[in-house]
Length: 545
Image (cartoon, rainbow, N blue to C red; front, top):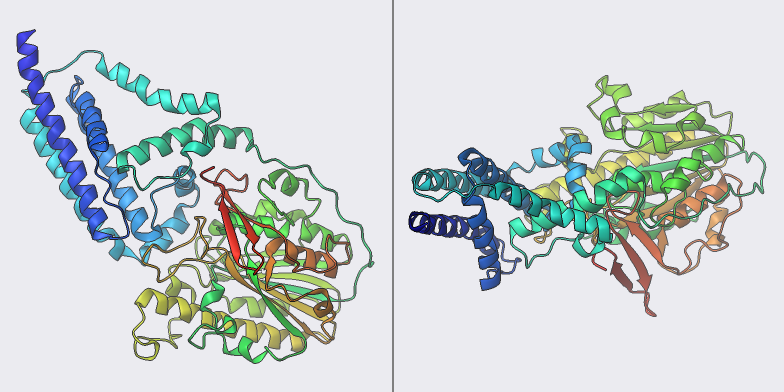
């Protein structure tokens, strides 16, 4: 027994050294990113120390190495995630990493610089751990069966969450927690709540399935064209008073009597959520049962009221694989993605190919057309022509390069919209309504983080306009002076044009909106948007309630 206590002091020293290694790495990164709080408290230090003391006391040296390699990888993942998004990793994102792997990879491909410091810290941490463990291996005390208790301890938290249905409490990462604690809590939530609820299609937010609206105009003799932008933050469009001229064509339409634009609030923070939500007229999370019913699928409604239906996307087959089944494809006459042009299922095409797609459509008939873009998704320069660089350091007052790349993609989108409208004017003499919005926006040029997929005020701020050709824009009478409109209301505008009754006489009336997180079921959280007496936005984040 005496020999055991002599040896155990080395376990104490080993755990102390390892704790300091993790603390040093994290606190260095927190200081390096001055937006983070310096969170080292005696309580958090003791917690980490006790965790490490248990780990270094198990028998198997190999198991210890594996555990700390995994811990080091989690630290690396978390630091990289924070470098881009400005937050630690949310539970659902571990699943999305695998389901949206190509998109994640594409995003970071153009931002490899953000991985430099986390990667250096990761390798320094891992090498230090290996060296320290090697020194103390022959000296430490080894406690039999301790690994069994550790396994039981690991299982305890997710089981508790599952039994108590305690999802909301542990949903959001906490800046005050150290990285390993955040990781343990989010993993517990992932296995104790998110995965079981995903498997059972149960979110606790399920809604009653509504019927298809009644038809009030049989087979309207018109064309409806939806241009669905990608990752477009309206605050970077000169149409909405951005300081640089990023949307010259749309600016020139401001005084056109057939043009109307508003500030829109997107229905989701990622394509895989917002596109199904928009095209199925979903107002709140969880709209999945409604989507699966196809009762309010706009393509089905169009087809059943005499329209030919078309969905053209610049995005690759691989990028759209999780979306197509939610668009009631059996009611689409045409469904082509970017791979149709690139001949590669993993490659997106340039948005200008959407213009030539219009040549395939018979405009002697009524058509419901969706043109789904890829610019301005990261990496931004991958989805615009290589020689299209109207903005640079010199003419932007030395903006950071990532922002320059982004506004170049927006100006490219403006030119694509211009050419779509020109093409439509040439192709048809029918009354044609062109509706533009974006699936979601993005944070850009913000020191607190970039990107989309997480709930914050930058990611739902999307544009909206409706423009009519070959007819006076009769929809203008259906709007009031309220500045905002939701994706749900825009879907109702489309429904009205398709000849169906809607829930609105005035579309952009003041009401509460909902922004769904990164999962259709609502398991990724959601945000209620309301407005005060001065029409200022009031956010209620439902992740932490």
